[in-house]
Image (cartoon, rainbow, N blue to C red; front, side, top):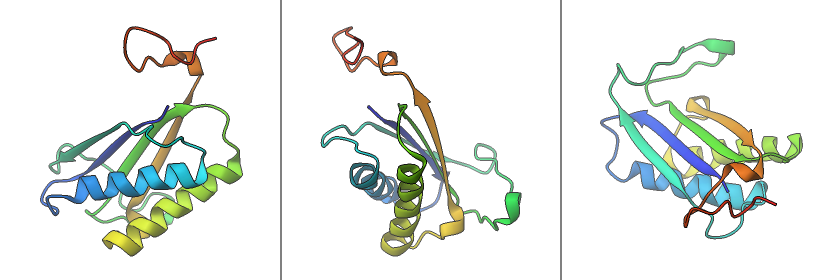
Length: 127
């Protein structure tokens, strides 16, 4: 059910996107009840004109190593689940890939279940 978008600056390690994607997927399974194999992700690399962010918004010192993660998913997770997810992603990206915790920006976009078709022209979750 989630669709994950990952954006970061060009010039990083070649396999970075796939490693970030793996951390996000495992964290979704661990914390927000995403089922196994429900893994759909888009990874994009941007030059400085294509990735714009404020380096100090809310007192968080972001660097050019920022990673922006946006996930569209079904509505219904608790605030506690979301907080656990944010924390796990940031901590794992830091520990496993050396990403600064300050550079992990996550946005969840919640939608109703009927807003998905996973193929065959069918709304698999519509009731």
